[in-house]
Image (cartoon, rainbow, N blue to C red):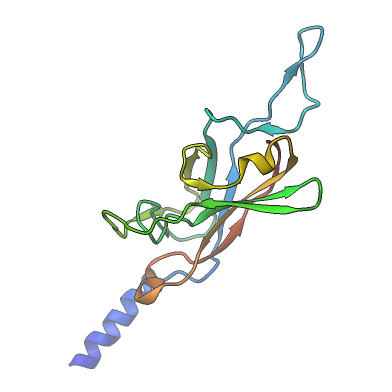
Length: 176
């Protein structure tokens, strides 16, 4: 009888399981700025997005698969650092912007975002809110390409319940 229950449990878990790297896309919904020209008509020759300490950067997570995807919520230690950014500077160097490490969690829930096929979730990122590790002084005045990266590695017995993989979006030109 025990083997029957194990078999039923295995069927349920396999029905919920998500294969690594299943289709999740990450992108920006970050408008290009326009500078007025001398005649007052907006110019479109400045492709760079400006990072401001007051603006949130909308990052989109989209389920491009044919089944629901569970993403670990960023409110706990497992999902806190899943989103990061790679900056490919015009001088050839690359810099990463990641969440700062948190060593003690007052609460550590394992909650999920459930994205249905075709559904998009928007994360509002404020790089100047104190939770991101990056050296603003080093990047000040630099131009480059900012690439959103979302990654979840397998962990313990929860692997079958959540999306695991690595998704990189298309980079956008930025000026620090």
